[in-house]
Length: 372
Image (cartoon, rainbow, N blue to C red; front, side, top):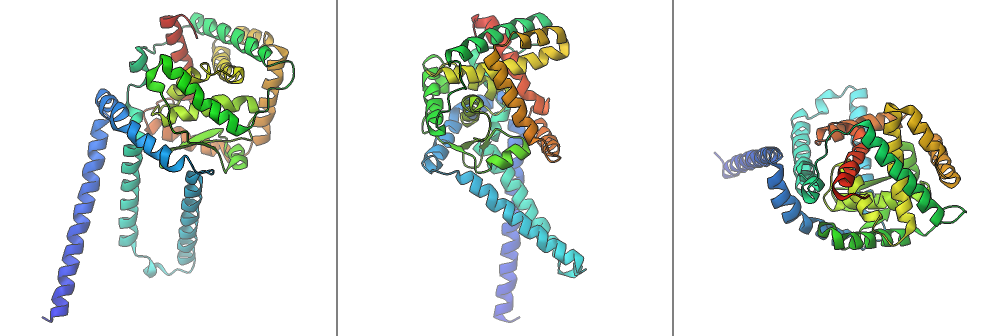
């Protein structure tokens, strides 16, 4: 056998061996990640409070200084790559050149892509979905609550939202520059960390979304990029929502993956801010969560709560309704279904309704500490 032929065969054997080792490695790591998800306290100690703070800080230091969202460009590039690939595939199918399709190569690329993304996602952030989180850190137990509990907490939130709106004056809510709001959101976490050391936040990396108008179309106010550690906020939303949404997305950066926990941690940060707009933003959002739940249990009480809102708050409620009405479209429900399944696949059994579970945390917190 010619020397070049033997060399080629040896090269092919080495390639197959390397491929098998890579496949085995990806499968073993993925299995270990799945097994670890059944040990939440191990994840809390060794990942969430162990190596994750270093990973998170590294991301924020690496991308936080950029004046734009690197993650948004990453998503755009990925989307463009997928669209080009789909167009090429459709052309091949349309021309019936099926022999040109290398199914083995496509399967191999898909396998490596899917498992690599799964591993990277979990190791860079996703394992936080399996931690005990804020319940463990604050010693809270989120139990089923009755109508009396819900009415009590909604009544407190009603009073808070009215009081803080009046403190902002009789005109429109302050239109502060988004950079100023982002800076204050970061400061609010530093203020909160005095009482809750685990909320210490360094190296700010929160930015305006490139997809603001598209965000309206798809129905999102903010999002966290687990691949770059950046938090993005849709700035086209009503100005009084931006402070709380910012704090919510920053909670994800600190490793609070579940939406209900991110809402609760965002609340803890916002109410520790020196800016009344942050207090109002948090209480406004939480009142709406609570009163919507109350509406399904006691519609008379919920309607009465709405009637007791200060006229200025009602004006903001109307602005929010108009915002969502302008965003109504046929695509948003499909996106919501997809996101619902994503959340359910990541330990949030109630899917998109998980956001509402923040009220359970508030009730537990109020029962233990006597305040909100």
